[in-house]
Image 1 (cartoon, rainbow, N blue to C red):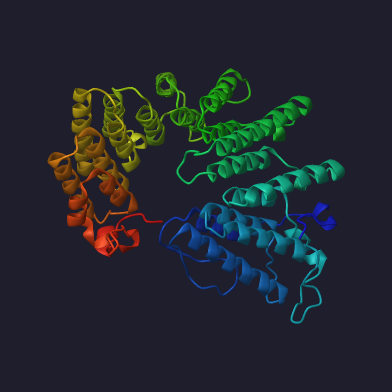
Image 2: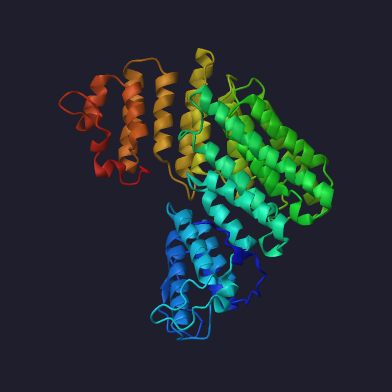
Length: 508
């Protein structure tokens, strides 16, 4: 059904339901286990919160009970647009697989109710359009719906349709309740970036066609940014002014392409922000551009990524020295994701000293963490990226020996670190180190066997670990340690991995 009936474009009063909104947003945040009592003058059950998805489902249940109680005339407390918006936002935060479908259904329900769709039905005391005018969707509604669609594989076309319709109806009516703003455009740009990410499940593009499609998506995102800049310059309306999120999401779209040209485009946007009087880059912007370079197979890609990291560190140091206060939105302080992206950049480079460069960055992260900067604490992805840099070393024999030593030293540091555990990628990367850094023979087999047995003990044997062992070890060793996964025809059956071997692995 159309999301934009004629009635929708009439301005209606919004009656805030503060208590309900607070409850819904608490659920949307997914704040771990706990209980939440409503204060809606209704006899509602105690609510237990376990996951963001569960929180969203329970928020829907609260809203449904409110809605039905008012329809039946059992209460004078009616849900309003804010009530529904809170739940649509809760769905967006949940990232559930069916969140976009549920969000669409809620918006359709708002339109249905505000058009008097329940009026005259059996048992309905309060169903007229006049009584439900206060649930008519507004810009906040559609922005939250767009956020849901951005995380849906099929959401891009719907997002573009909603943006076009909002712009058309606002231009026709001037109704400020449906005025598209920069957040509206940000969510559509985010849809471009997410759609680009869905082109490949492995984070890179295998075909020329996929690369071209990702590039086209990023260019369309850039066009939206340029259109908003032009509109702001023409009107001076702050609702149209691109913000850090606009630029950052556009940079992210370019990062999904995986080419030097795309990385340069992202870098140009960063430079534009640095020279702008209206918007400044934050740590997310810098990290998006670093990621673009990390995925670009160029000779200077890793060097450029580290240059940007150094700029961030310098800017943050100057801000601290000057006493300038930053919050989560304008801080330029690098975090673990930033540093890990630079490690990935070196891992994908052809520099034979990349194990040492990756180790240096990892050590800096550890030192920063010990010094009190918890945001820089290495994650398992940081350690894995550094081990991956070692596995990819293609230098001299001596350089490969050093790379192997560094890889296992990093693994030792990972095991000793608090709050982080090796995962399947850790063990797979270590086996790859044996494959690429040790000549075929007994020594390689011995290392592969030891790593694989450690993976079994940790319950982290996933398909990647098994494939790595199959590629690195002699068949006789594979049959010895993993023969339970081999069928009568000699084929490896990944579904036959024993539960005890994979009980802690992320097999999704």
